[in-house]
Length: 343
Ligand code: TXA
Ligand code: MG
Image 1 (cartoon, protein in one colour):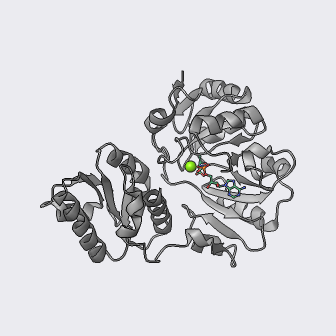
Image 2 (spheres, rainbow, N blue to C red):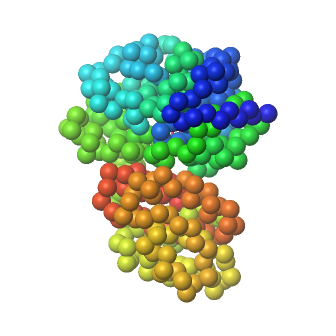
Image 3 (cartoon, protein in one colour):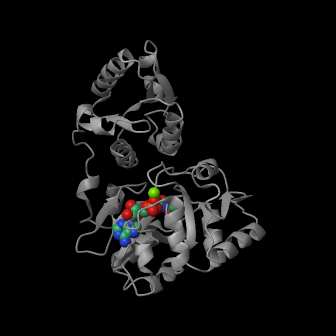
């Protein structure tokens, strides 16, 4: 049984937080909201609890977890050293949606880091996450609270849809704010490297870290997407086909794709920016509104819920085009669409 505790997103009831914190301290699994997405929390120094996280999510053991702490000072025992750059970044962006990868100390179990010599640390800003970590007084390992390969949860219902009965407790505080996971920045090597784009974009990081670079596999922004034909092996329910390029070119390719599929009697879902909805009037596609392309903040917040809505249409494909608005969130939105399409 998964116990659901509803809490206020700004002023959560301390008695409820205490119950959730006790559950964590005893090795239980507690899903909780962060400013990015819901996380599935476990006592980071309790190997058995960590193993339960991997089992509950059906996550492969070679994918390391982020450890959530209250402050940079609370991270100190978990890492070998805190480089100056990490101090500066923490001063500016913590609490907030930035995860920093550092060389780890002996305290961190191998189960958390998947055997790596580094550990990912984050100080979330959501008041419920902060209250929970403060009350637990232990570091909290937390991946996103979804089943492996499903979209990350941005409302409590998504967590229950994937994990009900597999976890002990869920703190329901409504929708998360950002909607995409944190930026993951690796400071353990010679050159600071963004491993996963997120709400804090490269240009903003560059103000403090002039030599920061994007990891190659996450740098695909602006690169040509493989043609839909090349993605043929991924065609399956729940797997979007992403069309890149200018609005006009991507729309043309999407419509061509949709027409071909409709001729074959396929059910076609289209995840459409509000501005594009009219383009689909004459075709028998199932539309899900992605929000206005002019407002990437809304699109980011909608993205995972919209992908789940598309899933439920039982379509053979989900057609979507990448965001073309210049905005700090656009590279992260593109990255998540690309990953969803490659799944
Ligand atoms: O916003 C977020 O980061 C959310 C909330 C819950 O905090 N968490 C999250 O966790 O997205 P998860 O497990 O879904 O993604 C963690 C990412 C993975 O891509 C993982 O490979 C990477 O962080 N990661 C964790 N530890 C790492 C390490 N030591 N070195 C490199 N990458 C690491
Ligand atoms: Mg995840």
